[in-house]
Length: 403
Image (cartoon, rainbow, N blue to C red; front, side, top):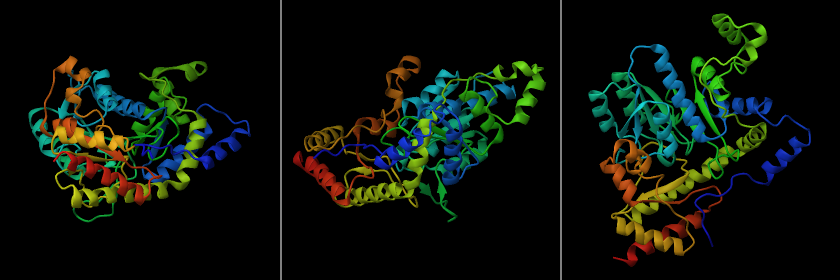
């Protein structure tokens, strides 16, 4: 039997929902169904606004673009905005910062969540005027967001959350308040809707925000920089400001934009996918807890992600072997038993060629450990408790064979 790292989330019910909708001869490019999906998403996640785009990478691009435009508009400095980016992240979390002309600074991961290390972040903020901080919830495990918010209060930067791995994990503040959902803490957050993720529109992503200004910028940037998707009052205001004749207003471009629009076809799948979102999250949460318990009891030499007080709906379960040799031995064995595996993301971005070619190789203690010793185990809603138990046993066998 093969245990895939990811399985498709779109099932026969979703396909039936889509085909019945297609029989009505609907509009297929971005339109009414996209708006319906966005409204449904905000109802679940709890933000005021959501903007559906064609990928999670595009969602990250728009978040950083809005931040950079805000910095440019403020005209408080001629310097490029400095953005702290997590070393343990994804390529297209970091790349937009470089592509948009910002000054990136790599921050190490902490030993608990593998997200941004608050201590290292504090050191960076003391030495540099930081405009924004990108926070990645690695594999869907909540980062140390409360500590990062405390640092934000001292230094005044934007928080942009990359919640692409899972928008369904929650955490509790130290004061015991109501659980908070990741993706609702920063100025903006991104989520991926790629095949095999918690929910899918085949390709796709969403940016969430509570900011009216940010929302309008996202709508314009998503579609070429024009104002066709913002409110009529806002369209009139912009046209009056730039003295645009009424006939020309529809094709007037007010800011630098992209074409990262989604389709209503994908949005239709998204609406259907939201119907059983809670059940899918429940199974992924159960699987993650089962992995955690097994590793704590039977593989204590391995480090695993911990986030006390959190309910973790992960995209995969991540573990850190004692040595690179142990990692290689375990992964060879589990692959021979039909268990798919890979490293966590790209490991450390400071050791990726695109970073090295521009800034030189950057070594960071925890990020390097993840780069050299991490591996993933499957977690998706098709796995049973028995499946997880078998996968765990294969990992233990692989480790003990070489001891």
